[in-house]
Image (cartoon, rainbow, N blue to C red; front, top):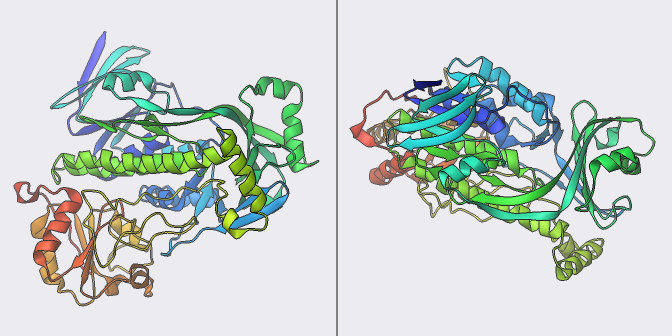
Amino acid sequence: MENRTLHTGTVAVIGNGPVGQTTALLLARWGIRVIVLDARPHRDPIGSKALCQQRDILDIWESVGVGQKVAEEGVSLSVSRTFHRDTELFSLSYTDKGYSPFPPFVNISQTRTEELLDGAITAQSLIDVRWGHEVINIDQDANGVRLECATADGTRTVEVEYCVMSTGSRSSALRRQLGVSFNGRSFEDKFLICDIRADLPDWAQERRFHFDPEWNPGRQVLIHPCPDSTFRIDWQVPGDFDLDQATANGDLDRRVRQIIGDTDYDIVWCSLYRFHARLVDRMRVGRVLLAGDCAHIVAPFGGRGLNSGVSDAENAAWKLAFVLRGWSDESLLDTYELERRAAALENLDVTSGTMEFLVPQSDQQREHRTAVLEAAHSDAAARSQVDSGRLSEPFWYTDSPLTTPSTVHPAEGRPPKGDLPRPAPGVLMPDAPVRVAGSDARNLRALCRDGVLVLAGAGVDTDRLRATVLDAVRVPVRLHRIDAIDADGRLARALDARVDEVWIVRPDGHIAAAVPADDVAVVREAVRTAVAARGSRVVCEVAATTA
């Protein structure tokens, strides 16, 4: 028997992992009802898995009440050390040109992250989580999406207006239904990943990457600290490595002992898998958006998998909300694919370069890698060519149709490792302490996620600016003078803002424009462009505040 339910103004999220959880929470934050569907009967523990969370992802989670909890429970990672055999080649500290309340990176198991997100979902009345609902068919037309679900009680059809698919990398059946390809490549070598609990205080807050250590010659080992005296060890191993055999014959214990010596330890979780680099040809298929690993998978060196997936979730959530609330034209959803597929291509470029250095595919690549590592002991130029992974960073939407370029604040290319670009249109707004009357917000990022944020220089006529902005768009708007909210001058220094400028910031914290305030037409067009505004054709409540 088939049960059929129509849900207007509702988004379905397929997949209840961190990307799906984040999508649901962010949509609910915008007042959108969400149905979360997952084929599993309940959540299953999966060990550390995606463990390294970047500071800007913590900001996203903080907007739904989870970021600070993740930061407090996780291990702060601020230094990355790279070794060749027994020699440290270099270390890298991570910086912030703003003043974020969060550390650069936090290590925490995916299992615990999911538990914290589940707690936030339980408290959110707009989210309906349905375990044991395997989506077996997706159909859509101009009015909505129909999802046929197999359940223990028979088939159910859920009808919604839009759908976000965050079903993980093993989503081939649903991708085929949507006509989406998932091309790429796989790497021959496997990676053995093991969480151990041990007393190793010297390693408690740093990432350690070893090229060709004596305990894994010709290959690599990566060590990450986790909460509760747990450490994740990644070994590159041959393609024919057998985990069950290694456990039975003592090879796994030998590998651990070669790293930690006689220290007592317990194995918490262990896994073996091959890395892949794949990307869908489309991330939007009509009313269905693809997010996270079902859209792109990369090698984990650099922690770009989950971090990028959460950024997918935020990008999708605010754009779906703006369309459903009637604030933006549906063309805004096209920019989800444009922006997040470009981000995925960037991640593939970075991680594939890393993997080619870690796992050379030809004699020429192997010779190059050996020569670089040998020279790096004494040559700074050679050290800069050593690729042990570029840790995750936000993508910059400098080429997005939502971005208005600036000649005064031009966008830069990819910055050096561990650094951030100067603020410019397309770049994520740096954080800084703020003072806002009548608001609980203590940092700039907290102001960004309630709509469009408009920041005015000290010389700007804010009355005229307010009238221009509110005439241009029908979206929630916050307007502040920079000098009025800048708690200690750090915001002005971070932005290098002029007194006659207007900075327009998207709901995801990315700068959309930095334009002269005296050109009303330019300001109007920039703010409309930032959200693909529908303008005066739609009337809705506007929340506007001025410090």
